[in-house]
Amino acid sequence: MKASPAAATDPVRLLHDAGLRVTPVRQGVLAILGKSKTPLDVPALLAQLPAQTDAVTVYRTLNTFTRKKMVHRVRGEERSWRYALGQASEGPEHQHPHFVCEQCGRVECLASAEVPTALAKAMKVDRGYAVHYTEVIVHGQCVRCR
Ligand SMILES: [Zn+2]
Ligand SMILES: [Zn+2]
Image (cartoon, rainbow, N blue to C red; front, top):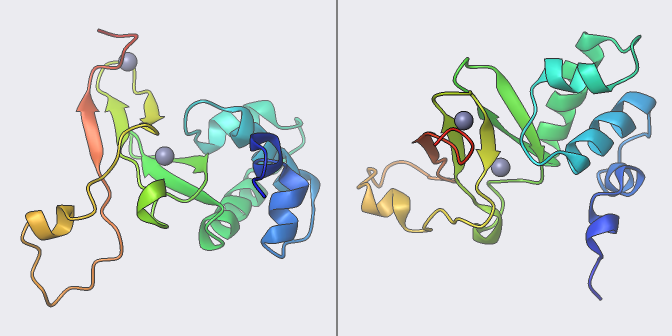
């Protein structure tokens, strides 16, 4: 049985699977991230949430989602966290590099690219360290800025 892409990003379903209560902010954040093609930071999320939404609640919600491995985060040029659905560090099939554009600041999930599973080994990370995953951020000019 294969879940359809729509079901995989259904906010209520995601919250249920994570054992979280369904709240308007949680539901809203997941719905926006589900529709977004790029990872979003908190100001970008707030711009799409109802006007009275509390920023602190959004930060707290994203921390919960990160802890529950429902989202992954990546830092942009200006060092603010941006969030995307799915877990970049869980299983090699979900590991993808991110791209940060030096010109427009756009951050993208390079979903069709892969982080080689043996990368930490290739970098000769000392065996004393337990490597959980390797984060790769590619910097340059995005397709739109080239
Ligand atoms: Zn760009
Ligand atoms: Zn990503």
